[in-house]
Length: 279
Image (cartoon, rainbow, N blue to C red; front, side, top):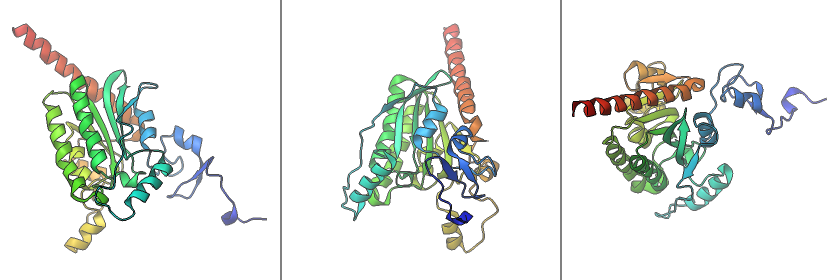
């Protein structure tokens, strides 16, 4: 008879919680927004899981799907790593963009996927984010971006760092429309992504317990030779110190985004109506 350590758990049906080590039914886990029903551990979500959670059913239409990165700098093993990651994740890049409806409100939704090279921002991710703002501006619809990233992609060097300025400039142009841009920060949102478009939202939402910052806490501790405060760089810590507007539980995220979009768009309509009345 096999002991517990020898029992093989079918990965297609069950998921092991890394926090409490409980064996969970995948179906049950999905129904609970990928949060452990035993200990509350928050699993990371893929971009398409996020889209399914946020977009009204059957409304998401993807844009820029075939954009793929190239090894411009001939970085060792980068080409092979890209191909391996594409097969593993079934994605062309770390960002998926498209138009959808959120509670009936037409929105441009872009989502980063940490499973694709840590959600890192290279030339293609930067291009897709910039195009998201441009497309939304031309269609006169709001933007929602869900970030999950380790930062700039080191294999693309200065080209990846340029995307910080590029995405920030595209965001600034979009904001001239006065349409809302909601930035959603999930675990983790760090590096060049946190230092650019992710922190430029009109409303910045953080998911509970998400790690948010520039450099990681271990790097900071090693640099300043000091112990960091309890919960440093957590979503709750950032809310307390004024870096984010609201911390939201995953199950409430769609409803909160919808209410913010509705409030912002109603406000724009009211201003337009008052302006016409004055004329």
